[in-house]
Image (tube, rainbow, N blue to C red; front, side, top):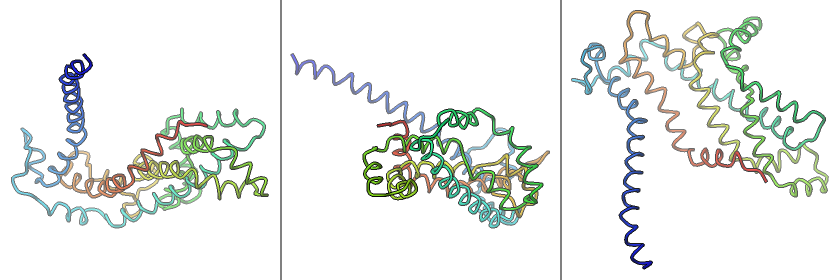
Length: 283
């Protein structure tokens, strides 16, 4: 009877497996489809991008569109600005968020939970509400169209603090107690014990911060009016005209701006998934 039931269950399992793969394939098409269309559009002529009905494949592959982007925009300078902005924000968040997260998770002081709750309330405020105050502060400091104006407001994150706090909460207390008995102070415990054990969380925050900084558009558009001081996101937005947009150049520039992030995610995706999976664990 067991063998018969096992054999009878095989068709059902095959149907379930086929349905799962069908759903996953449909999801893959939905996710990859826009990127394929973006790539094909980047190789079309301007007339083909505005032709009705739309054409799927370009009649002639216009690889010159990619070099034309460098003639229209200071792409190299924008790329360098984006790299420096992303690196500055990411390094600063790893330092400040890890220190704050460790304090909230491991140090006991009056009003700890209340202060952390107020801290997290920042996540409920739409980021657009901070644009005008941030711009006024940056303007008063003389940081408009500067790298400092792009980096400093993004040096800290309430979400990053929350993410790393979950990792520090999951660390075993025995290790800290042993370190205290050996005479280690809180900073020594933080740097030599807590940070190495929270490596998955640091990697996850690194990837999230890099993606957020690289794709940040609204704030750079506000504080950067000079094309030479713009990151790629804001620079590419200037290719959209009020009455006409050259979509082939816009898509070509977007492809070149997207490739570094795709490569970074593919290389680090295992660490990213591991870090997110461990976020909710607590010992």
